[in-house]
Image 1 (cartoon, rainbow, N blue to C red):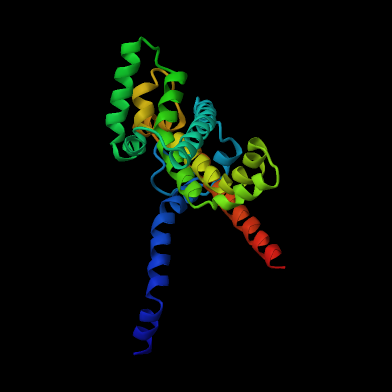
Image 2 (image 1 turned 90 degrees about the vertical axis):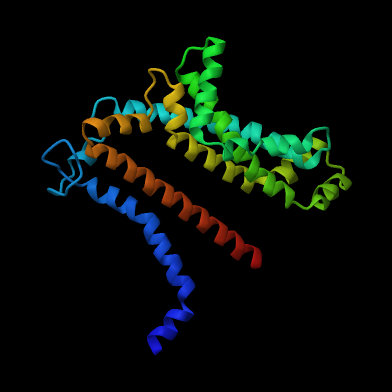
Length: 267
């Protein structure tokens, strides 16, 4: 039958589109219910179209405060994890030293370890040190959690780099710093950027590690969890929709820049 032949020819495309729809469906639901006006406390059933939540996204107490705190922690955790992770990745790829293999294996432990185990271990460490739980303990925990992901992304990029390009720069009398800034860093930049974006997303979205080590500090994921016990404000859907749209726009802009660079390189 023609229909079956067409399905067989396009089976991979159909499977990919279905998977994409499955992944995007929750975001579509969040987007739709950001325009809802529920009659009760819970925003679980469609009642009436309204723009009230979009006009006042900070209408719920402490929502924007927790969002600002999460953005601050994610920003500084991304900087710390990216700087440390990039240095560790270059050290593991470019240098030979004792216990290099063991260190390379240990880097993957936070990725393989359940978050609740790491959260409890960090909490035990902070309590034994007498540290006061709050912003700084959350930041340290997020840097430790995101570090392995940055190392993995940057390490894969550094391993694929052609060392002959750096040798050519040195042959042209470029110093070590000039070679790194003008040759090594631009080539490794996509891996560093990927690790930084991954670290930011993981830090901003984290709940388990934050819940263990936050003390009285309330981040946006913790605010959402607490609100779900009493009711779900529509403003939460507004914030989620805005972040989803920003993320999609960033991906589209990146793809557009990459396609323009390819077309200019061909010309």
